[in-house]
Length: 347
Picture (cartoon, rainbow, N blue to C red):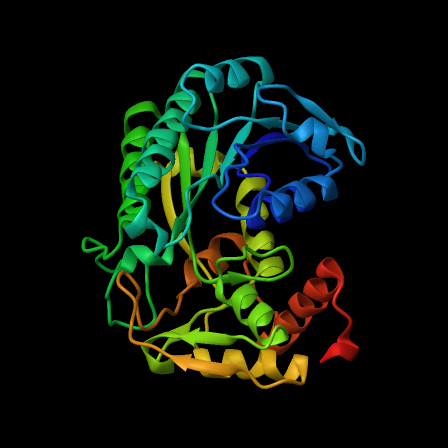
């Protein structure tokens, strides 16, 4: 298949592209390379895909991979670009689109709301319009566990109410689900939303807990522990997430056409709620170093607990997360040491 992956220079985007290429697909990666966090990390991810820095930064130009040849191409472009995005769809003739491009982060949405509307609403509309106009059979897109808001029913299920998001980021992701439903209903193409729970692993984002905690502990800086540590998260290792996403992309949608189930929504997580303090302790054990903890109140827009029921994804796609927290944390820390040139002896 020929697959467009938006957000290809992102954390999940990199891993999805690598897995699709491993399985023999032709992939076009798209990313706007914005400065939400260190662009050098994004460029390094693209280098893993065989895209040299000098080529990656050229706007609206297709670059071929040095590692994968014409099986992987990259283009610097924003999904908000209403003029250029349709041209890309017209020229490339995609079979499936995997939309992972978005302005991420719950807390940042309080400080910079406009970027969430631009990318997550306007950009997503542009993707839907291109899918409609260029005969895309299946759109797979990233939603988020944040749509559940302050829901206290555990574990979270996609049948639970999700009408009261408590951050603009969550509201934008819920909007994506509603927009996708509308387009599937009106225009007859399949859309599958995946509500990601807390994803971690090698090449992870610098604004996420795993990265922040590891970096702070290594550098003898205090880590911020919100809600005084009374937090639980369904931490999900990147390989498990990637396996699930690729299974959804690869599976035929013909049966969904027959059963008139063009719109689908799934949780994708690890099926376990892990205490934040236990997660931190696992990092401490791997680093053989105790964290300096700064206990703080709950942040605006944050939630105390997440936990995914993924039964539907298991039944429909055979999804089976298997990476333990100890194993996943170990792999991330090993990557962090190598990428930033930090020797374990320094701990």
